[in-house]
Image 1 (cartoon, rainbow, N blue to C red):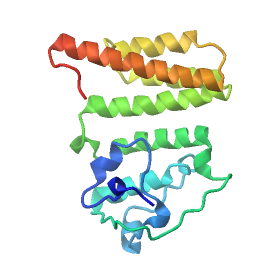
Image 2 (cartoon, rainbow, N blue to C red; image 1 turned 90 degrees about the vertical axis):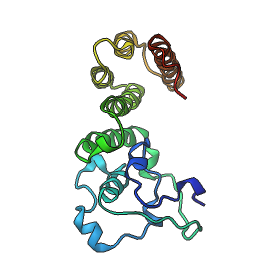
Image 3 (tube, rainbow, N blue to C red; image 1 turned 180 degrees about the horizontal axis):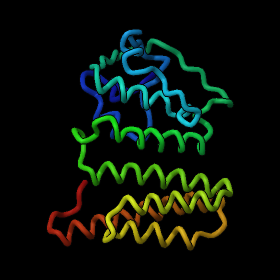
Length: 203
């Protein structure tokens, strides 16, 4: 059953954009054919396949209101060959969705710096899975793209650059450990910056 907090209603564009992936099941949604045609349907791009639902619902939410029904009305079948189980492919789809969302009017939802950080986070996650897959050059490239989305003076930019060139051979455990360390460092950096500016840490 979809948890109550995921029954989206009314203007949900900003809520969908703030997520790290799609929380609406396509199989549980009823969409008017006219609305689907108006936004162009699913994206015709193989790299979007793992996140095409998120991209579609973002485009729909720009133009239409949603109405959530707080009842379990469908069953979802889980199996071993689900596209969403391919983490590398999924990370690429979510990155491309956020990049495409530059055209979707994100300005009404957040400041530019927040939106750029969301894209940086998608580069970061994709880089980790590339590294885990042994694609070192591509992983470094995406770490550097993440760094480039921060201002030159930002500590996060220096951290990304440092990790890009000091990364040891990848393993699953090490990749998970790196992600946790990066998150802790960035939280600490953001907290320090907030204290220096007198704003206090955000929660």
